Image (cartoon, rainbow, N blue to C red; front, side, top):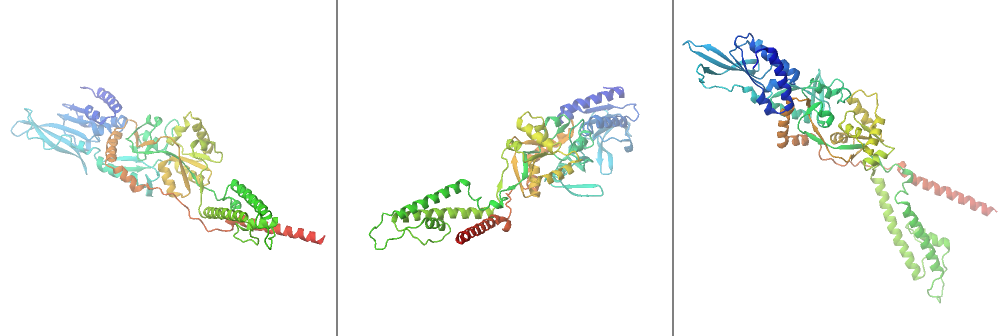
Length: 554
């Protein structure tokens, strides 16, 4: 009980601060019930309610007293509607009036929200003896079932992957589509509110220096009721904001440009096999030539034949072996059975090797292969050819910046080495990072949702997971905002009902297909090694011709 307004204001302030620390809807509804006796006090109702509204805006995030407090004013003169400048939802008055018969009756009315403003609506009458007559025709506080009662919320947004996309912005109005638009339309219908989408003037997601900047800074300063874009939950943000229930989760990934293995056209013909295969094949050919020549010269066949066959020379034995992989016949055929077995074995060996070589050469020229420059985060940290880029203010920034792990420290050092001081906002930063990503020497550390969006934009990207657990996302509200609890309750229901999953399926391409680029037509650059081989053969033949002419001249 308070007899002075100053004591009432002080107590009300403490009550608001205490209630917000509880951060529970049922506690709000139990603590914030008031009865005011206004007998002999001029303008009692406007004075008290205006004080409550100002305290609510200053300490209660503009929500606590507005939606959860209940006020009953007794022995009050009904104020005119223009005198009521507050936005408290639940106000009822009891006015004593005399009837014609001389008896007194107390008429109870409640203040409703109507399309054309606020109006008093009769609830029922109470006689002097305390009996209710007639029974109440309406609830005393009917606005409680409408939750936010048509309140217009300010929601901060920016374009973010497939979750929120800017569709049009004309005459200062901002229009967004995809998940964020559908989600707040559904929540607005459930919680009975309208909303206005607002972009941060600096077009920044927000990072902490002395205070928060960007979108998060507007939420912290109560310029926005909430952020329409989910942020990762961490200790630093939890000290400045109250988060809703988990809306989604994301995993840390590195995105980089695919690297092709078909860049070295000069070595195309010899890149089919590894060098060990060529060495073993050459040794096998030398062994077969030597064995074939030895068998044919020292044949143990019929020594009494009428016409003895002339054994092949060394050059004929070499050419006989070389003609086999070229599918050419030989002028000399083996005479002995053992020689024929060696010759047949060499044929089967060459048929197999040529078939494998031809098939692999066709595959190399027909299919673009990708090679992975790194397979783990540790290999990326040691890779000198790749630099790492990370968006400022990202939730992953805190994980690597404050980590004691040696690999994470190396990753953070590479991140700092690629940051530019000339970038002013997050949109320019995203555009800059996309350009760097296409150069082929940068790995972009981001969440899986952003990686999905980049894959739909660029078809030449490859992804690698960071290797640690998922990061959970929630909608940030001002610290201790009662709206967070209201939204969390409905978001949990939407999750249980499958609505959030349906919105994700609607706007996200959940079935990622591996992009296989079409191989362009083969041109001269793909056959450089063939031309080199041909030119080398012609050059050698001219050299040999010159040597022969020189020897014949002498």
